[in-house]
Image (cartoon, rainbow, N blue to C red; front, side):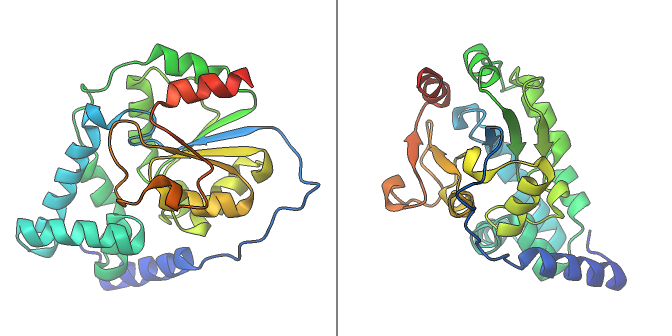
Length: 249
């Protein structure tokens, strides 16, 4: 539902702050700390073939139709347009229409989790990673926790950061990444980021992280060849196998 004028003004202020890109400051060479492993959630910690995000996209389109009073074709166009321009559909709806993020997050993540199945091999390899293990998603934390539970990964992570924890600032914005880095107390030069969207690896790379594009069984939404992105260090279509190779290094 749209916000009242006062709430809309407050959200506008919040999102203007979230849009401010903090300068990309190189991490000093002497920076040191515990290893950290930061994982995106959707289409990264489960394969796209499980079709979970297809449900979310359908519900996004329905929400836009009802909130803005447009037909399905227009709503689907706006969903994609806001994702491209603002990083997420939600960010576009908040910035351009003053939509209440909580209503949106509840509506679009009220889905069927039964397509998800545990992955004991992936779980064992994540558990073997030394250091801190973190999830950073543009979805809500509660949704992320349900996905992790269904995948048999719930007990493996030290922290889960959803969109609420970043003040509704989405990846790929620098503010979102920097808030997670600060809140988790990690050293970027000791961290690795795993993502299915190459846009979301640009800031981690600039901060000094190793970056891994996880493509699995579906092409990235950008349509770009992975090697066209200088901020992508590694590309894998099998996250569990890639982690196995890392553990052997």
